Image (cartoon, rainbow, N blue to C red; front, top):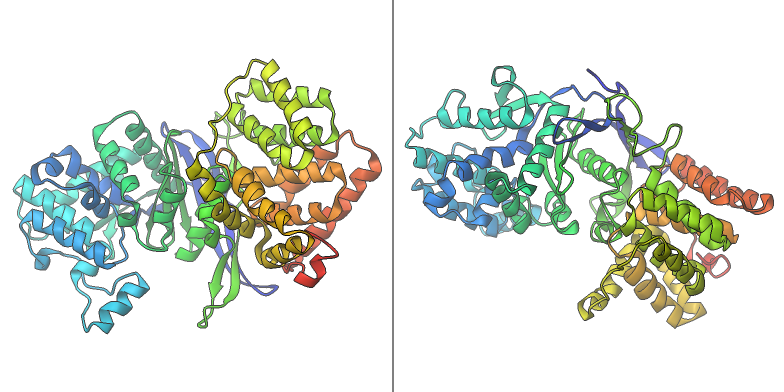
Length: 570
């Protein structure tokens, strides 16, 4: 059944003009098959392409090949990867191939230049020619030859339909997607092996089931995902999203790209699978769409976004290396309830845009800013019922930057009175050393092109304020893991709306949009924040918001210049 026929989009905007539109379909599914969120046609039959590689590598573990041939973790990760053909990728591929007893000529994949631009340029400079070992799928092919060697099969035609290797691959795809073997749609992949098409929802279910199996100790999936998270660079390479997502989330999110606009991801400890397809096959749109989905699901905290800053906004550069256009997602997911049709009973409330947890944190932030102890206690009691201990702790820690220590401490006292004890560990010296760089990364994400002017003008007021803002504010506090960056920005906006500080509210409303909040989410957060404050203050907050929203919708994303900012500190 098609869950929602209206596809999402990723829009290429050059200046204020919409130039191109990429249509996107997506499914978020739990390991057991329950839909969590959808957009577009989730029953759309889609070739998994290279997103299938972790499943195709699984027989190396489960059939005893890894143990028999002494395959190392980095080699197993390469077998799961679409590598960039960088020198270390080539060395590991050659090492894996050597374990099989076959030479490069046995690889059925064709030759192509390294996917990594610098690696390709270096190969040409050195007078080399692309070979099969440079193919991004050479690790997968070497893994298949290892299976051939271990099982004693004829290596001839190992890539073709009907060969035992490909039947073994088909068994795994059917096993994890839940699509019967006879219903798998087969084609020929770009590297020559059989590729399989399944409904997008089944693809997401496979990823969810795979990460859940790994988390529960199933040796095969645990070994495969363990290799991918231990050696994420082998899965893709330098400046590649598959690699950087694993590093930024410390292995919590494992993603695998596929050709023609396919992206899949699994979320560890959640048994959650994500699959998306860009209709026109644009890889650039698939990357933007995946990050937008992870952000909506609040799977990327401030620290992760700090590490992924170059992916937001996603810029298209000209031949001079200058930003020339931006890719913007319009991909709001529809949350699905337990029966697969309605709003998620523990997520978005009927008629609401924000999840229940975000609504509570926004209300808590506003109540702290107003000094309303009754509302603070009400919000904390609701959070306690939802089991939001970590999120509340982070919200209260963050609040001290804006409402001051006394109100933040009072909030903690009320929270402890509800029976919540603990608190996070103290920061180590290593943590402190990361604050400046982490703060700078995060500040750039929030302020975008206004960042340099902001630093100049805060420094003009006082150099210590500039340092404290970056190191203490963004690096130490706002850059902590534990709370999604978009949630942090909505909570900050709620505080500033109550306090009536228009210039700062203006900046953080823009920041909320910049880090992925939709206008509807910002609007709802402001309405929650201004409940109970005087009408005039609420009106002023919405005047600021209407100005920001108008500029956002018109495509005018320019920020205040450095000279302006002394009068209008952001």
